[in-house]
Image (tube, rainbow, N blue to C red):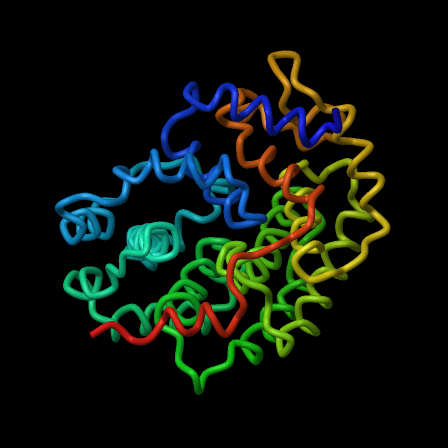
Length: 319
């Protein structure tokens, strides 16, 4: 059996052993990527995580009291979370609204706007886009927020993110050659592409392809130059973005070879073993879920549920 199928079977067999949020992450990614029927069925069993009688209160709680989480480069990011204290909570609430809309056909945007105004959401996004240093360090947190507000949940037909994305590409030259900077840079660029696909729900706009190709060329160069110091999560997410955009990388075979040498001694899942970026706190099957679902996706064809036009039709402004 091919390695991706071995890992997929392992996770579905042991799914009940994972925390619910890990189950949702796995199922939502797999179902969006290629309409995996087992993942779609699992999403329905997890419906009660999001569909409650108090959606508005749930969103308010996320905004005002976001749960504690493991954060990469936590010490370096701390000053920017202090500068933008609503960022994490708002991002989590936006994700909740997105999950409700695209996985459970429930539009909770009005519920969200009763806790925080659209003007406030847009203002925070504007501030983040203008704050180059915050973008560089917050990386995924800033990019996810901007795409959730301006592209996924409250898009404006007259607004293009391409000028902003062209500015994001220029941040590449501001990153050092350290492993932490490589992680932040790679995730900054990959999450632009992932956000543009609405987290694997749609194809990417042709207008944005040139800037994403440039981002992938920058990532490819970074991984090529610092290959032993880049973790598997970064490498697999790069390949996933190659699949989304049709970008062909000469690194694919090397990354696949590393994957084949990285099986955990505890089960049929992958951990960092032969690179120097070993994530010692992410070696259990649960803590390795992100890495492994990315690997499965990176080895299969991207078949999103929605075309761009269909996705936009679902996003008429909330009443």
